[in-house]
Length: 123
Image (cartoon, rainbow, N blue to C red; front, top):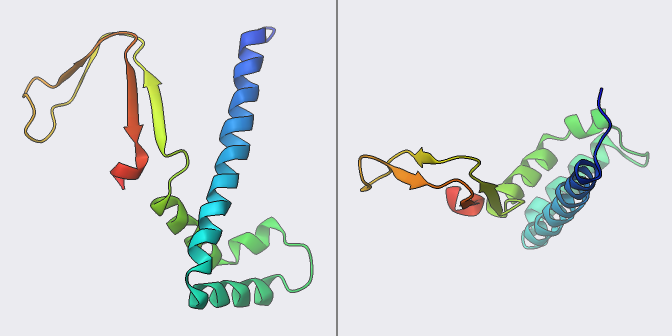
C-alpha cells in the first residue's frame, strides 16, 4: 500500500537486469560450451527437440516434455553455477556454526561484514 521509493525501484530494476538477463545469458553460454564438446549429447538434444517441437514455436508444455534438455541445462548450472558467488551483508552480529576442524564456538561475524559464498565450491 505504500509508494515505492526511488532506491527500491532502482534495486528492483538491478535485480531484474542482473539476476534475469545476465544469469540466463551465462547459463546458455556454458550450456552450449558443454554441448558442442559432446556430439552424442548434441544429437540427443536435437532429436528430443525435433520430436517434441518439430517446426512450430515451443510452448511451456513443450519444455516440460523435454527431460533431457532440462537435465542438460541443470548439469550446466551444476558445473558452472550462476551466479558463481553469492554475497550477503550481516545486518547484526551473528555466529556461523562450527565446521570441520573449527572452533567449537563457531565463527563470529560482525554487523556489516560481507560474506562471499562460492556456489561452485559447494558443488
